[in-house]
Length: 205
Image (cartoon, rainbow, N blue to C red; front, side, top):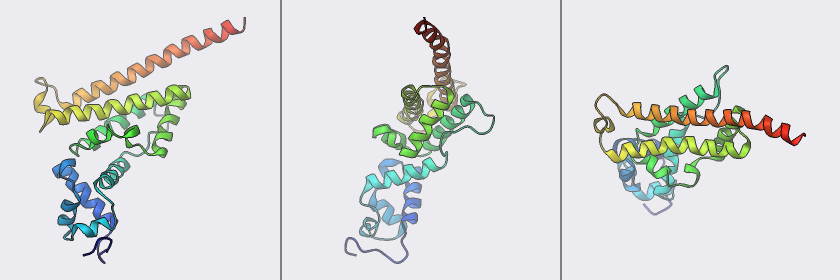
């Protein structure tokens, strides 16, 4: 089939479905245009009609996985700490199912985050009490930690649980780390609450 020619039954959704399946079962290294084509029973040239290359396949998979945990936000009376904790653990649970995907993301500008996801994340921290510039840093700090933790687990190889201290599992490590991240952010907010009134009082004298 000449490059650029599509088949009647092939769709972009089918390509994303197969790419996601391969990334989950074989990891990022196993995700190739040829592998996707073989899984769908078409020639590699048919895949190129819809997707220019592997980088685009990876972006599509990242987008699909990201949809599973949505945007960072608070539900009802939920505290920002509870919302952030659940969101970060959802990222960990979602991406760790795809070997190598988090390592790929951590090397992308802004972790491959879309503008709407970035805007929601920064807005979340502004609402929590951080000034805009600090909110950007808080978002980056929190999400980078989780992807870094997934990369560490992946580097350990196989089942990361078997490489930890007896009685501790991979989730214990990431939960502790997420709580430490939140504790650090809480401390920064508390310091700001103490220093801002003092600075305002001093400037009014």
